[in-house]
Length: 220
Image 1 (spheres, rainbow, N blue to C red):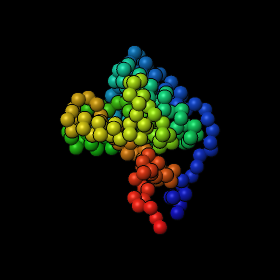
Image 2: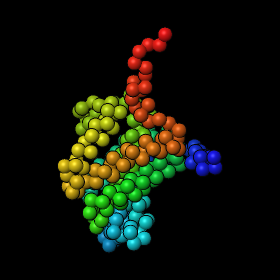
Image 3: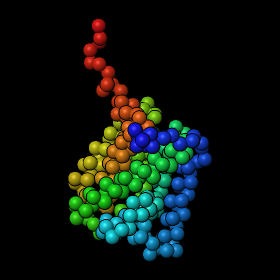
Image 4: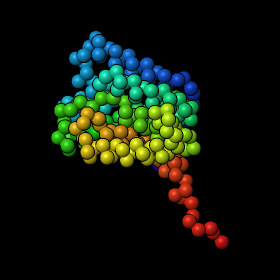
């Protein structure tokens, strides 16, 4: 009962633009590491071989390091578009907790996945795991929202999440060493769903696809 109370303890609701603060921190870290202290790159990235030596802070710091300007741009673009909607639903403190917890757990999952696939020396960087978690949260709170992929193709948010999941799973099996941590993206979805169930007491699948839970035949 004590553990359940702690896990479900609500944080005070307030709005102070945590999404924009996260974008600012990501940009600042990128500029600092890229231009002033490139030696920090491997200290902040999540490198399984280094984590095994005790560098456990990398489970969080990898979220704020990016491999290039385009990597940073697209991650922050996703956070800019979807983050404020989720933040208004959760409150800034809960949103920040959600972002950091799902991102860190995606890093932990990737640590084991990279180790299993023999990539313990490969650095993992970027906020993608947390961004995918935010995307799932957006779809949970806005299941009827229509997102225009590349500004052209209209897709409802739940189907976009499902489509991305299939694409990431397929990309993992056919191009695992292609430079993109597809399993980290999927882990972001998975831990976001777990967060909703464990901490927020919501069934994200029911919110995303309510038709799956409707009776097939009318009741008498």
